[in-house]
Amino acid sequence: MSILVVEDLVKHYTVRRGWFGGAAETVRAVDGVSFVIDSGECLGIVGESGSGKTTLTRAILGLERPTAGRIVFEGEDIHALSPKALRAQRARIQMVFQDPHASLNPRMSVRDIVAEPMEVHRDVLGLSGRQMTDRVAELLELVRMERGHLTRYPHEFSGGQRQRIGIARALACNPRLVVLDEPTSALDVSVQAQVLALLIGLQDQLGLTFLFISHDLAVVRYICHRAALIYRGKLVEDGPVDQIFDAPRTDYAKTLLAAMPDPDPGKSPFWGPAAQGKIQPDSEKGAP
Amino acid sequence: MSARTTAEASGTSGGEGLARAFYRFRQNPLSLVGLVLVALLLFLAIFGPLVAPYPEHLAGEVSVLDRFKPPSAAFWFGTNEVGQDILSMVVAGAQVSLLSAMGVIVIATLIGTLIGLAAGYFGTWIDEVLMRFTDLILTLPALILAMAIAAGLGPSIVNMVIALALAWWPGFARLVRGEVIGLKEEQFVVAARAQGAGAGRIIFRHILPNVTSPIIVKMSLDVGFAILAVASLGFIGIGVRPPTPEWGVMLSVSRSNLPHFWWTAIFPGMAIFVAVLAFNLFGEGLRQALDPRARR
Ligand SMILES: Nc1ncnc2c1ncn2[C@@H]1O[C@H](COP(=O)(O)OP(=O)(O)OP(=O)(O)O)[C@@H](O)[C@H]1O
Ligand SMILES: [Mg+2]
Image (cartoon, rainbow over all chains, first blue to last red; front, side):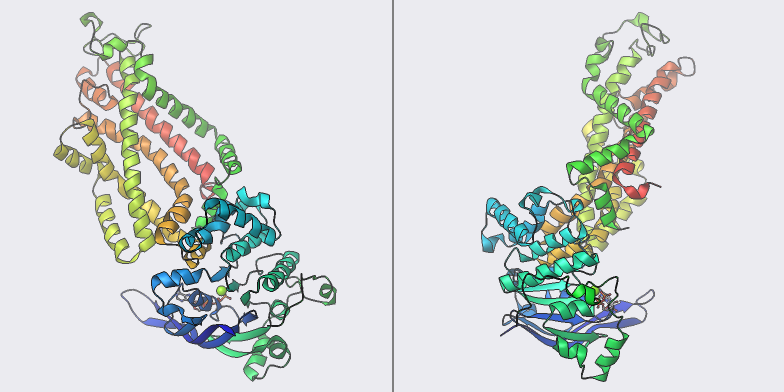
């Protein structure tokens, strides 16, 4: 059963060059992308820098209105919803950001950061402050952190720990879909593997659906069931990961894969035979 | 211009951050001088009339025989044309100067911060209209604008404070707007928006707490300049009026005693100078402690 359907999504930006509104130029950030995510699966989106991946996530999160096309989440076109309904819908789609340093407010305690989605959707959830604190403690344990970290501030944590806090925040309202925009690319190699293993475990345990954006083909292959290649705002090919990487159908995909940098031995936790045995995910990748 | 560096390195989020900021503050001896002088001024503003050597002089109980006494053991700063002890007057004057200057800055900060938050966060025509208005006021010389407003409102200390505040807020509005424009693109703000947080929550929970350091720095620097402005208005006779001890007023009155009775001018003048300097040193110290961009 599909949870998210993206139909012919287009997002163009108009950029003005020079003064006095001179030559307006159109940037086709996303240019007619369609795909479907099934409930419980992990879809990887792969593409080089500037190919429109972040723009795509912003449209799915309802942060930006698409130029054309539809985004249907659990049967509802999210950009046709009333502002109130859209707000409620947002509890169901959550996001984990690339930079764990920039995505947590330095002036807020871990408790307040993780509780924020519950605060925002208080009218629906009806949780008291006390209940939220308990839930935050629970979430911290879920992401393998200590309850005692509640009262600390982001600057007291390492990158990997901060990313766990970001994951706990994303899970606070029991979302159906979690969008992850390069969630591990800012982390050290060893930490990357731990965070990915945590994500796979959580997906299994909570029945989450992931939209996983990455540069790193090895990471996508490891965590995702299916992958879609995007190039200059267009979807080039999609299918099961093994097929995409081992037997791409289109020449375009072949060229693209060849042109993408090999997983960098220093950067990817999945490079080389030595790495293969090191990763201990909490559970095996489940079938969608 | 990353707001993140400000917020992070200023790190006043936890108690540890405050300790670190205070450590950086102490590194500079000039900041400590500023701190001590500011503390002294605040002490005088609160307890001035109690520690003045001749409190009865402030009420006008003076002896004609004590007119124009030069500085001596009895009258450290000498006496004025009616025989009042100038040290007592200078000490008592701290109250009017500091309280009204702080009043000006607090009101200006409130107005400027609200306008800057609204302009920076909402952008578009709201920004356009608010900033046109801000720039208009900014182009008018603050003191002349304040004079006009004070003249219109009628002479009183409260009116003078209102007048100066109405001329003073644009600086805060510009400062806050600039910070907000940087902050609203920060990922933690985008994250809050993605969760469905409304404008009020984003502005007051996410943006404002990250602008407090630069606001506090500007406030402490500006209190010094506001003391000067209060004295200037007193000097030209549209701020504080003569029976109230105020440094600008004392300077103004002393003009007819010069050059012979120099002490009637020099001590209130020094009080103004020291007060402006104190808040400048203190404010600069805060800037260095809270904002790493200001350090080499
Ligand atoms: N607000 C905007 N205004 C104008 N152009 C934009 C805007 N946002 C993105 N773009 C442009 O759209 C294109 C796609 O950007 P996007 O950020 O989606 O790429 P990306 O795939 O996420 O890249 P990266 O891997 O570097 O994060 C780029 O050319 C970018 O310059
Ligand atoms: Mg991106």
